[in-house]
Image 1 (cartoon, rainbow, N blue to C red):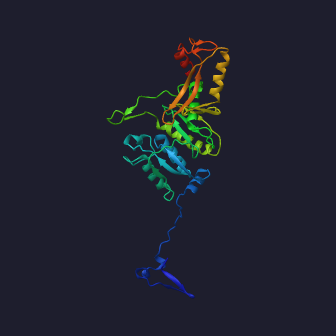
Image 2: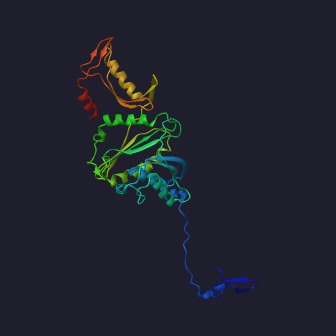
Image 3: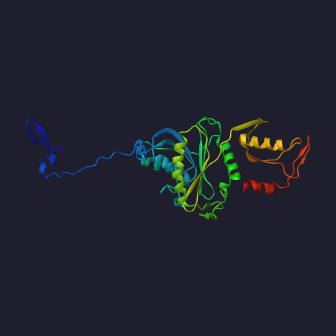
Length: 335
């Protein structure tokens, strides 16, 4: 303690200014607890999960994204680059994990928040940039339905043989066809205006739902990255707190190229079209394809084919598509 020192067989006081006047018997004994700073490795141990130090990118740090990220970060999962150009505004505090940083970019504020937990393992905030190339590591997309009661996860396979946009089409097909997803896309209450600009509206969603799904989602992401397979799980929540999982079937991807455009579909679309064709032989037939256009990448994405309308003209060498029943038929497949 810097007061005395052994000299041979004797103990003598050290002459070091004021400390020499302190007698050992007058010193108090204070118990001390040695505490180590939290590290990603020890945080993973406390969470009962393996630590993962891989470099990853997290895009979108809103209400769900911020809580998903913090769940993963606090469990020692990943070394992250954060991407989000949105500002953290006062109304965000009702559902966002941040408790300060009003007026800052969410990515910067979240990086600072994360750095306070693991000072030597800080995440990095960067400007928003989403590459459209098909190279690089697998992607996972997590998002809520309009009412925030349901969580959707789109997980690419490890070899990226099925892309996020193709998985999105399979998800839309399930929303249309699966009765268990009835009402999935119905929006909740009217949005709340938080400022005076025409687009200053915030969706009304419950923090309870976001917190539940953030916990489910962070665990699901960790588990998904241990598997090489694609998956589309959907968790449906209700007002009583119950959550049910629905797994959307994954179809084999297919594609064609014509005149600089790429047409992406899957085996279920092909099989449905083939069945329509067989039932109308020997006449020609057609129908309607539901999907999406990506004008920037010149990609057509097909989710679901509808059969030939009732008033179509079908002959062995000519087909003229009609329109009768399309609206009611669409309502039928949508449930």
